[in-house]
Image (tube, rainbow, N blue to C red; front, side, top):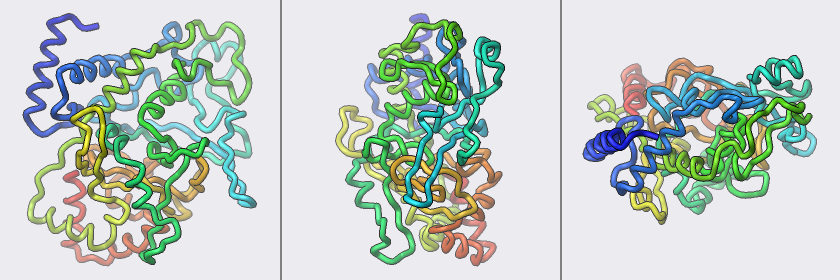
Length: 383
């Protein structure tokens, strides 16, 4: 815990930040002082690093949230990647998350104790599984996305392309049938579940709602490899992390030049905004700074077919291998690797990988004049 002077200094910085438009890592404007204090407390947990005696592993991908979510500041994304796997049946469309065999997230690192006990360097993946690479997304503005009413997503969905525009967004559903919105395949329904799942699946840190360690590809852990008592993070610390991520503001977009304004117009004209919906509106919420707010997210939080070249795994009750959630574009200018697996090194390259429902917009982009292509890229680099 920080000393009183440290807390006061940090709060003073936040008060100043609240007087201007948010930068990466800033909290939402108009938080109460108590909410700002919870934000700071959560950031301390988010920035902490676990070791085996405090709960790390024995299977893990990273020793703390900050190890992956750090670009350009805490809460940002990074090129750090991990492996997910599942098995899709083309016969009946059933998606097996391989839960009985350690899936769908397979940890790439192990503690020394597990390495010595089993002689492994990572969790084994079933030979017949489909695999996918996933880079680390930023979590800026996720509290606002969490507060967008489910009815909004259902209204945006057009699973049968009833309007005939070639865009057929679908909601994904969690394993229990609830509507999902977080993750590259829109699997996880709520921000709290997204955060809590990250502790267990990415760090091997058990929580009050998930107090049992991960298996090793379905097999129980050998005795003596996990010295920490479960749950390895308490309810209060977990709640503060939820506060921190919930209160992280989306970075403000840069002011548009005349060229960027033209790019924004062309972005809409060629159909990009049909999936990358420029604004979503939150609903009622107990936090004033979150309730009934407009967020320039550039997403519909729906699944769209992106074509066979990007296809990898199925996930949840709906998402087939070629479907991905529309990625939010707020904070886009801070990303160094783009798309779900980081294969694109630039915005223009990411556009070129768009297929399926987005193929028409990609073709329209390719057909633009040099000036209009430059304008769209300038607009996107402002986000």
